[in-house]
Image 1: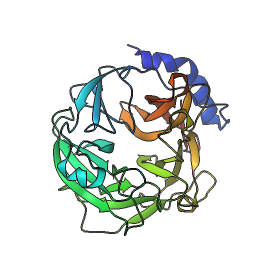
Image 2 (image 1 turned 180 degrees about the horizontal axis):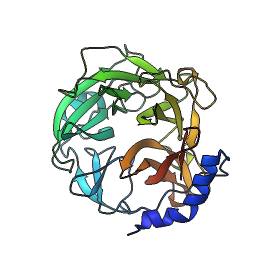
Image 3 (image 1 turned 135 degrees about the vertical axis):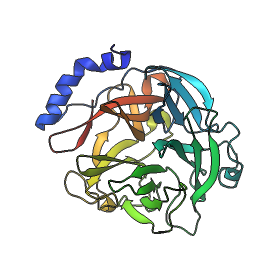
Image 4 (image 1 turned 120 degrees about the vertical axis):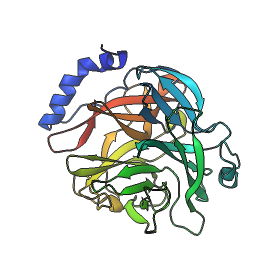
Length: 326
């Protein structure tokens, strides 16, 4: 059965994939795939749970949840933490004001890392919740994993858990300040490893240039680090765009397509504003769904007053091993 999402992309897929595989430059970024219903999400992360349903978790209101039976039609499904996390009040002023979740299935359970902070501050924290099913209403909060304050040169928000080829767990995180960082995680607890090293992964050339929302994917012998550059949260005036670099090691060094180090401001564009509709795509995550990778993100709909909405596209890799969306 062809879902509406797949049907909406099918006409352009062959041309886009062929151009990417041949190294031909694509004239424009593709439109988001067809999604509908309650799709007003920000910083989305998506899973396909054992019950077959897709669950998307996003920023605000105890980590809002939407569910879909087919990855096209979405409905509100409560929240991961309806009452929030009491400890988060010290960082955001509101137990339910939680940001940028990341959900993955590891060791027979679902893990959700998430953030508590306020705009313009690096007095921030990353927390952890766990669930046996990944469904809304089943999450149990485990408290803080890492924090930052004005004494630190990093910002402990926007977490994402990755497992490397040797089975080691890592948490990428960071927003503005001195960029994207990486720490080790203890697989037995989901908390910080005894190795307390904070490793730099990516940064902009000036601290007034935005870089945040890291997401690491392993493919074909490389680790790919996706980030969001520039400004979110300004409706149709948002300048967010999705960038990438890659490395043979999860700890780096990451370089872009031109060989420039991501720690020196490097980055290759994957998706940016385009057409008459899409402004500021970012806050991205990647979901492996069957035999395909999906780029899941939010964007701002110019034709709808700059409202934030869920975007989904397929993610491929060209002949040189660089990712593209279609």
